[in-house]
Length: 402
Image (cartoon, rainbow, N blue to C red; front, top):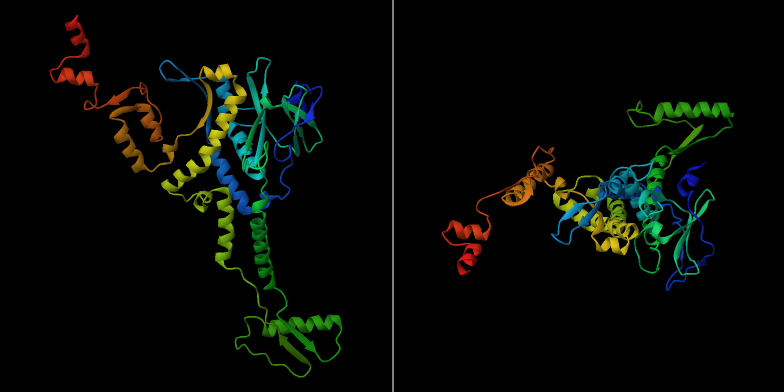
């Protein structure tokens, strides 16, 4: 049994479907024909985003309405989100692949494999060559996927994680990347120009004309002798002495060069299109640059993952009882040591962090009994302050009144 059949073996095709009616644009997705991933600049930029986004940690949590506490969710579901979403890849691989598809095609899909009770069993990223949105006679929405192998499968909307970018002109799909193609074409032309410029240095620099007919072997011999005598470093004087049997005409090759400003301009345009800076791509970012990148690129991705999975994995009733999927990472791990120290100085005295939370910020392992909170005596409950200063607590005052 092939991989396709192993993943989709329990699915049943809807009896009858119709192409979805949308208010704007079409209801069919075809991956972008221009292979932007072949551009080294574009690929490096997408890789920088994907490998940082893949560090996000998916969690199932339950918000308690009674005390506003955040309770740990289902352990099996958390293992799928954090460790092994399917037998063939890790959670890092899954997020990396989906984010890469997201920036290449502006649409990313994953199959949410569920059991008969609706519980998540696995998540598989999908790489279709065509996706069509269809409806059944009851107006339920489905996605019909066609893969490069020729296999086809139809999935209910609730079984598919969908991420969209440039979500504007189409009701169901993100727009294409045609806007960046001129810049990618220019980058490709620049690379070819540099290659041709390098090659031209090894081409003909002059013409040696003999005033008599020579055999091909003799002509080649004379040419090699001329190069050896006059066109190598051995000719210290820089002068060639010829008789009437030969004439040498030098060729002045004017190579077109591309200045650094032109190269940087195209690179900057591609980076701005993706919303990142060069320092993120080459990992030379400062703390402030990382914070800006996280807030403008990583956080929107984490929000999309969180909202989509929460809606696709839980019913409205389950969501009403506080069931939520979140994707988060410890941003403080990327702060400087000075910033971490200042944060701990400010937050620990207020009792906002446990000992282990403080150690985690410093990238240190937890310790036993590290879930205790330390708090300075300068920050205490207001009733205790009244007692300390000789006043009476509210309870004592109520007892005296009674």
